[in-house]
Amino acid sequence: MKVAGIIAEYNPFHKGHAHMINMVKSAGFDACVAVVSGCFVQRGDAGICSKWARAEMALLGGVDLVIEMPVCYSMSGAQTFAGAGVSLIDGIGVVDSLCFGSESGRLAPLLRTADALSSVEFEAFLAEELSGGATFAAARTAAAARIEPETAELLRRPNDTLAIEYILAMRRFAVGLTPFTIKREGAMHDSEAAEGQFMSASQIRKMITLGSDISAFVPKSTADILQREAQKGLAPASIAAHERVVLAALRQKSRSGFAALPDISEGLENRLYAASRRAVTIENFLDLCKTKRYTMARLRRLMLAAFLGQDKSAPPVPPYIRVLGFNSIGAELLKKAKKTATLPIIVKPAAIKALDKAAQMVFEWESAAQDLWGLFVPDAPECGADYTTSPITVRYYNILMEELTCQ
Image (cartoon, rainbow, N blue to C red; front, side, top):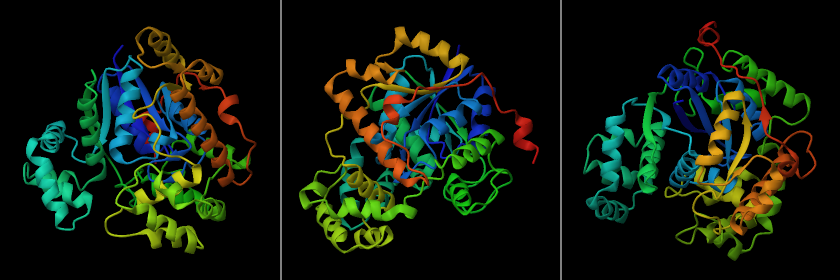
């Protein structure tokens, strides 16, 4: 069996995701394993619905096995996010290739850009560009382009950039995965415009929040799950609708507490602390923190890390594999993984008790984050879901291309 691995968020699972999975399986892969962000996602926001509901969407969309990326990695910069995803995909020991979408759709230029970023000259060029006052992203792009000119365009496109980070992570961890890219179709990242049946996840989330009809842009199974979760008061999750919960946590944070957050540098903790004393809304807080040196996504991640009580003590990569859901093919992969996995696999939550302190700490952070995520949905659930919820199981089902083209 030839198995593909995908790193995703599925926030929510839409027709662009379904198209990619169909393309992957059309390329000769028999099964698909997806690493999916937990309750909080990489852009520094809450998942639109629970991670189990999003795992169910993925399973009904053609994924066979869904595993979780814990919040201390899912809510990180691209390098840490990519490294965590790659380590989980490789750690389960049943995946042959890491598959990812990219704007270019060609592997060769992505590999050349990774070469440029790994070259001896790059660090010196990067220091020169940073000394001129450029943001890190701009300096990185300019430095790499001095080695390989085509990188300038690639590093300005979000999916190409993340694809390059996956390649760098695969090299960094010396994994046995083969990279495989598929051209990304449809609306661009964060685009407000639809291209046929494809619309960006960010715009779909806006439509969900506004109560607009999203049925043209998501599989029916996704629409049904979102409706079910909404009827139970468990969707949509919205930080903006409950922002004083976050502001309360920020106001209780000390300067040293901000300094202990992951990804803090250059005295940024002082700016965060000062903003926490003045801000009366989340938008106000972010505006007070903003400079051209820090992206809004990074500031949002830091804000939520402060809210969640996280610090720099997480292991560099996830210490276990948490199963969120599987179908019959996924069950076969899990049986095989018992012999091939290099990381412990958690199917039943109680199994975490047998792991080391680092693994238990990451699981406790995830559990606490899930409990706090519950404050952002219309009807807040009780605490403890991470210790009581079993993986989602579904029968094998794949979205047919007819559904993707019938609109």
